[in-house]
Amino acid sequence: MLQKKVLLTEDEMPRQWYNILPDMPNGMLPPLHPGTGQPVGPDDLAPIFPMNLIEQEVSPQRWIDIPEPVLEKYAYYRPSPLGRAYSLEQFLQTPAKIYFKNEGVSPAGSHKPNTAIPQAYYNKIFGTKRIATETGAGQWGSAMSFAGALFDLEVKVYMVRISFDQKPYRRLMMNTWGATCVPSPSPDTNAGRKILEQNPDSPGSLGIAISEAVEDAVTTPDSKYALGSVLNHVMLHQTIIGLEAQKQMEKIGEYPDIVIGCAGGGSNFAGLALPYILDKIHGKQVQVIAVEPASCPTMTRGPFVYDFGDTAQTTPLMPMHSLGHAFIPAPIHAGGLRYHGMAPIVSQLIMDKMIEPRAVFQLETFAAGVAWARTEGFIPAPETNHALAAVIQEAKKCKEEGKAKTILVNWSGHGLVDLMAYNAYFEGKLFDYEMPDDEIQQALMALENFPKCPVR
Ligand SMILES: Cc1ncc(COP(=O)(O)O)c(C=O)c1O
Image (cartoon, rainbow, N blue to C red; front, side, top):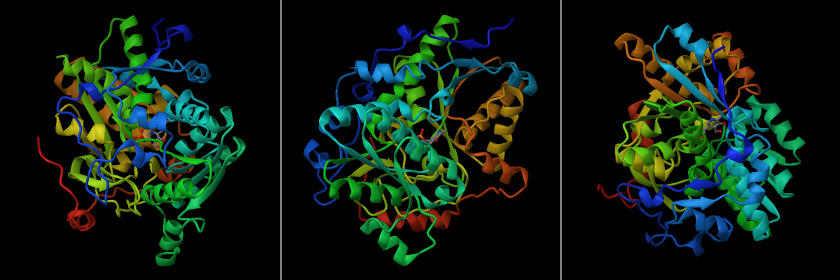
């Protein structure tokens, strides 16, 4: 019998996360205070995040110990399996070997608990009682609600309106774990009220929901804000994915030629890719591909600029690929990929030519998801389908070129709560959207007077 999965025991789970900051080939630009234009210090972030997470955000330490209580909670679902997609390979008639790291096995159904658990833990020991956060597709909100339940923290989630309407089961998952979930824009914050006054039917965006959650956290006693992607400490926590994958592939004597992940804010992609980028920095040949929707082409068409992380301009200015903080993406079903910016670490590594960004269209992503489900069984999340579309592109290229490359993909989450999106696809109701150039230029005008990222 062919070996379908490579498993690690709980004892073999990595005990440290990998922090790429000290290894960045050209360093990192600092986040800037929007008022002074100066780099933000830990104190500027203190109203929003607990100091122990702020320390991780800027840590120069390469390896950071995973606390025992976090390991215990990780063990609910980690180590996650590494699978080999033999049936998809056969279906595609490709000589490529396709491996997938299955992050859909967590209670929330995606990679998001890998950072929700440590964020809840660090908040708990800091003394936080309540977390305010936002969610796009609902994956992060569910993960934070699950982690809040594990560490006895109250959680309030601002969920992007379009996803709130499309995915009622996500809200119910959050409620089941004891959290409150409201559609964003909401009447609960100044930021939300302002948007609703201008457009009562606003579909919302991650940028708006972040503004609401940050405002909530800084105006409510004993509350902090938690972000499910983009920030350095989130990328750090997610490296458990790539570190496990390296151990698993080593067990079977494999090393990937190509590493692929979808990227919304960049966290699942970075979680798998960063340990391989460390190898690449040390001379290993590995192609690393980050995949985004053509309708929200942050990495492929957004410039590397200083921009706000949210619509109401409450966050520091971050150096990132961005379509402008006011950008509201088309209502595609991959809600977790509808974000105007990209993690500064991922953005800088694109500038450093370590990562290759790629955009794919919605219909191709659903075709890939359906092909996956009909061969490999697991039904992928619409976000994950973006990575799978690129896997199929690469596997077909291998067939054309007669090359047996080894492809490793981050299977970031299951789509069991996204079946209405599949239904819309089956009924022919989904379309390919491509951002017109003039709309991108229009959205970027808001950044004209912002500090510029020096080219290095
Ligand atoms: C299953 C899944 N994959 C990917 C993403 C994209 O987020 P990130 O780029 O931070 O991994 C999301 C976000 O909600 C998600 O739910």
